[in-house]
Each structure stands twice: as C-alpha cells, then as structure tokens.
Length: 142
Image (cartoon, rainbow, N blue to C red):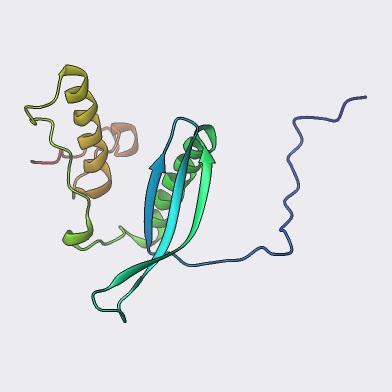
C-alpha cells in the first residue's frame, strides 16, 4: 500500500545545523530560483562593512510560500507588540508610478508595488472594512 502523501513530514535537524544572525539581506534572482544572501553590519571597520556569511537559494514556489509566512509572522508580531518601528533612512524608496520611462504595463506594476510599499511603510495602511467594523482605514497621502 502506498505511503500516505498527506501526512505532515517529520522535521529533523542535521548534525551540522547552525543558527546565525543577520541584519542585512540581499536578493539575487534567476529564472530557476531566488537566492537570499545574509549578512551583518560590522561598524568596527571604517567605513562600516556588511559581512555576508550565508546564502540560501529557494525555488520560486518555496520563495512564494516563505514570503507568505514572513508576512504572517510580521502581522502576528505587530498585533502583539505594536508596529515595528523603522528609521526613515532605512525604509526603501517608494516606487514612482509617474516615472515617464515606464510603459503601460510597467506603470501598472509600479502602481501595485507602490501600494505594497504603502502597506508596509505608511502610517495608514489599507485595512479591509470587515476588520475595522465596516469603516475603511484612511488612505495614505503621497
């Protein structure tokens, strides 16, 4: 009889499993996968340097699932602890949909990415009315 494919897998850690800290990430993408490179700011060196120590490549399906769970964890953390505070100088620049070099498809994509940016970094992200007692949250101002 075939093994039950719906059973949850068991998690086991390799002998050489390690835990590292990162406060910096860079991304490299290809048609096959997304590589995330982890590093840590070293301010003892002048000028300061990011010491990159680990890279992990994820298939695009794994990257999509990981992105979902990262978002879920940030939302749950903020529900308990309040908004994650970021200094203005570390917030990524908001994509500009009015960039004249964009074609129509590019403009639509940048408009969507600007909306996503607003959800993460504005003071007034969109909250569905069903979660706010039927009242739309204020829209961010640009």
